[in-house]
Each structure stands twice: as C-alpha cells, then as structure tokens.
Length: 391
Image (cartoon, rainbow, N blue to C red; front, side, top):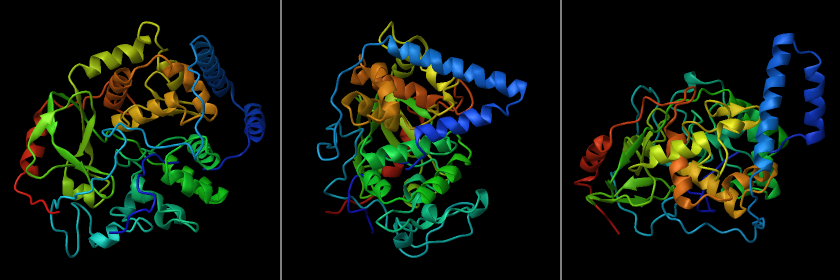
C-alpha cells in the first residue's frame, strides 16, 4: 500500500486573489446587476452585516494562534484519527477490484496510489483537472484520492461537493499561510500553484452535493479500529461497545469504502439526545451561548456568499472544525469570525451541534434520511464477524 509520509490526513482545500482584488471585482460586478439581482445582493449584504453584528456581541475566546511548528494533533481519538499499530485483515483483496455499476477495474495497489486515485464513474462529472486526478509536483497528491471523484470525501477528509470555489480557495490560502492546520494539507497547499488551486476549486464547486451519511442516535456501536488510510472500520469479530460521548462514522460497505467507491457512503452514529440538543443550539443559539447558525450560513445552512454550506457534512468533520476554531488551529479571516461563536461551547455542545447539522440534507432544513437508531448497527455487526485478525 502507498500511504502519505505525513501520516494523518483529514481536512482539505489553496491560493486566492487578494482581498483588495476581490473587492474591486465585486464592486465592478455590482454595477452591472439587474434590479432583481441587485436586491438579492443587498439582501445578502444585509444578512452578512447581521452576522458580523451578532458575532461582535459575543464574547471572544482569547486563544493564541498556533504556528505550524507548535501544532499537534488533539488528543481526542474518536475525532482525530490515528492509525492503529496492529492492523486487522478485514478481507483479502487480490486481483482486479470492481464496484457496482462501474465497468472499470483497478487492483488494490492502484486504488491505494494516492497520486493517481481511481475514477469509477468518469461520465458522472466534468473532466478532472490534472491536479485532481494525478496531483502535481512537490508532493501534491491527487485531490480525488481523499475527497473522491464525487467530492463527498470520507470522514477523515472534507466534503467539497458544491462548496463555493471562493471558499475553497480561501482555505487553501490559509493552509499555505499556516492559518489553518491539517498536516497533509499544509504541505500540499505550500506547493500548489495558483492555477492548479483555481482549477481544483472550480471543479469541486461544480459537483452536486447529496446526503452521504445518515445520522443514527444509538447507545452502542461496533468496536472499531483505524486502518492505514485513517478510515475507521468495524473490528472483525469485535462485537459492540457503549458509544459514550463520541461520534463514530463507519462505512455502509467496508469493501466499497476500501475501493474508494463514490457511490457508497457512511453511517454517523451519535449519542441519543444529540439531535434535539444540537437543534436547540443551532436554531436558538443555546440560551445565549452562541448565535443562530442560520444568521451566517443561510436559512437552510447551505451557505451564504463565501460563508460555506455545512448541512449534511460529516458530523465528525464538523466537530473537528469547531474544535479547531476554539483551540486556535484555524485563525485566518474566517476563523476570526468563528472565534466568538465557539467561545462558550463545551466539547459536548460541539458534538451535538455537529450531529444535528450533519443530519440535515443539502437543500432542506430537515433530512428524511435519518435512520432509526440501531437499524444499520446490526448489519454492520454481522459483516464484522468471522473475519480474521493478524498481527
């Protein structure tokens, strides 16, 4: 297997134009707007103003920004995965591998080549820019390896499908400058050209978002391990255990996840009561602890101007970002806006918010995809049985 020398890799997104250039472009574009689009632009500007005003009224957590040299992985194993030293063998994967509905085949070594990720369904998207399909010089990996050809990614990486190109560019710029931490992404962004960054951002922004991981409230989850690619998998023959105060995201189908199949998603298990608690925080601000998420992220949490869509994203990924904002690992321009939002949040608050926001489908307030508690758990437990463990 070919794995990144940097070890842990989650998050993703580089380079943009200066704020002055962006402002000048916005100003020139506004003069050409139709009356309807002008009114829409004014409405968006008003909402952004209210967002800024609400943030200004919140207490600011004074946490020193972390430099790349100071940064280290937070000690929260369920949210910040570290591969296990002992790797169970889930299944033997020799010869050509296939996924349902695709005429293509790859060996597992080809699938694991993160400089040349598999593209099982090339007709479902526009032609990939070279950097997305094959990476670039300086150790830049193929973007689709972590984020998939659908842009939906795995829980250890970001969901980029339909995220605005401007936002992705800003995040890449923050990674490059050290204003956002994420190990592998800092190294790759540092060597990413502006043109590659632009092409990748525009390509991912054109992909269609969709429900990728239904959220399940439950008391117990399968026992798990972290594989070499930082994917959490059910432990073969391991049974189950209490979920505690954790979010556990597992693939619907282990083999298809190992094949990086963009049609096979995940299940996000969360503690019982998380959705109701999270909804109260998101919709009311948690009795003064924070502000309503819709003020900045839009009424359906599907983004507003350069403020990103968050509805339906991986709950584990969302938790990590809230944690990063609070501990200072994300301290770019957008991070400064979030500082007051997370100032009074506990880790349990962040978990509940992430669970609820992750349960919302892109394009709607409520997700009809929330599975019944415990339903997928049984099937996962069955699949995990009768598989051998090797040291």
